[in-house]
Length: 199
Figure 1 (cartoon, rainbow, N blue to C red):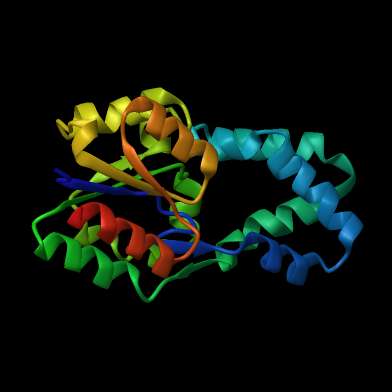
Figure 2 (figure 1 turned 45 degrees about the vertical axis):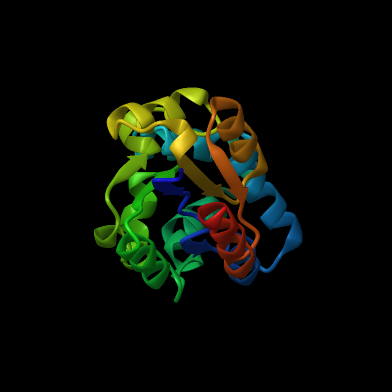
């Protein structure tokens, strides 16, 4: 029997519309490619999610992207603009809790992004807790982070459903023993969740 629903946050309970944001900010495809290479393809963004000091991580990004340092700084300065709330997060969470389910979060998230867009996390007070990667020094899909949330909240994986938009994270959760739903959109995920809760 399912007792706990565990949500990812980015592009599940809130929106992280990065590509539209950077296209509007920089407008030049070559610049965008170079900036994205320095921020994402290097793995530096994961270092933020692991809780490493933002100034140190940004220094590595800038060193790696020497040709586009101004554009990297501009992107990081305004990255909060790509974060926005969803209209369904709080009602969905409240409905599940009213039905007696424990509702937690498990998210790769950095303090920098928390501070850049705090209003997008307005659903957190309605939840029963959770784990941010930056607070525990581990990120999905590392099996250790699934163990961490289960140990922290005394969860039986067989009594949990995990919802995430990243297929690698979903695969890792299932291997760990959690039931899981690949989030594509709210309607699809809610329908799949209801089937599991009612089945």
